[in-house]
Image (cartoon, helix red, strand yellow):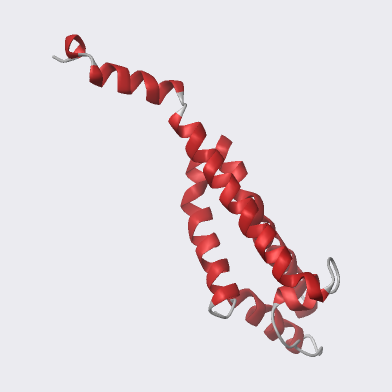
Length: 134
């Protein structure tokens, strides 16, 4: 498979990762086991934004683009494909804050759903009634 096509596949995977970080918490409302992947993904994304950790997908994409005879790009995936394309550069911090708000909202909603779960409430009732104890 040509390197350019592989680089495009990595690009799609990278975009999927960004979308997953943004909305994966909401998907976890239906599929809670998804949190096993979502929590580390959010942590990694937070590290990229706040600490400047390198994203391995950017390195892989750049390597594949160079092997295909193209130039690697400077900066990260978000700088290259999202900032200035999907939203103006001057709104980068606002977009980051909005994404953080979306992720936090998803987790707050998840916690509220978990607390109100009929199965959880039934278990709590069973534990609180001495008659139900063996």
